[in-house]
Length: 400
Image (tube, rainbow, N blue to C red):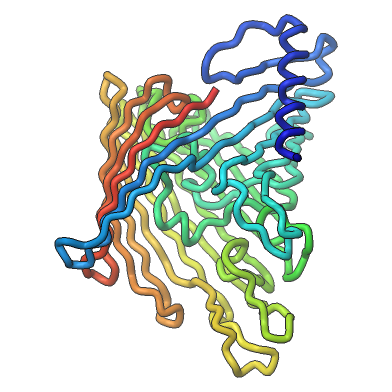
């Protein structure tokens, strides 16, 4: 019923907007671009979706192995953004509709689908200063903040799936400083709930504190290319961004900070422990060549969750360890790109999780940049140095 009401509302918005003689737009720049006659607000509506074919061969050293194949709509989203009252007060709303987007119902979000991805206000209250409030991505590792629609592989790396900070509810303060004609430093700070997106029954643990510094010694990338993979703008001079992030989640109640299972004890109480995550990453682009590197490390005061008596383990364990992800690509003049990625994950012994290495080779055809593209990649993964599996993926993205 909620979904039908949402679709009906969107249809009404589209019908009304076009009846107001919307100015011309083009593919990839939003299905609707509307500004009120008195310039008191604006709205851009841009739906997008991704379809994937995934084949996985779990051979484990056995040449016959087992083959699994899946077709999936990995993401289907409705994005709204614009300004309200003044161009200095911007907003963004993004809703997810695919099973993957809305999965994660539990007792802490009233066992409901998690439709809301982003719901955030961004206030440019002074020169070079912005205050954000609401639910959105934290200023974590660069790969996570890059939109899933702007990737040079079918999906993000294993580093991101195990260690990223993802979305949370709270406030963020952002500032940028210019030194000379090119050198730019950006500072980003956030205080958030610490339990992830769409939580309604919180705050169970403590707050989460995140700080990130970004250094751009050669100036800004074209078209915000520091947060988009592949050098689609073909930078004519070298561009580099180096970022450092520190995250402290006080009394975290989930196995991966704001993700993973809640560590619930037999008596119904929740185990809590302080978790710290650090990232170091970089993005480099020049004449069609792009490189992105990331290092992540998570620690916890007490990795093993225990019952109220403090001695009996509950079975829940905080996922601690470190990871490295390196990837590079080259964009041909025909807008085909070849890219390669190497990812390694090493976990603390207490987690009983074996080290993982993954090698990925990908190819993309950018028809209209990231807005319309076809991609494929093949990955070879080893678990503790032993044969594990081969994965082949094929898919397309369309973003209006």
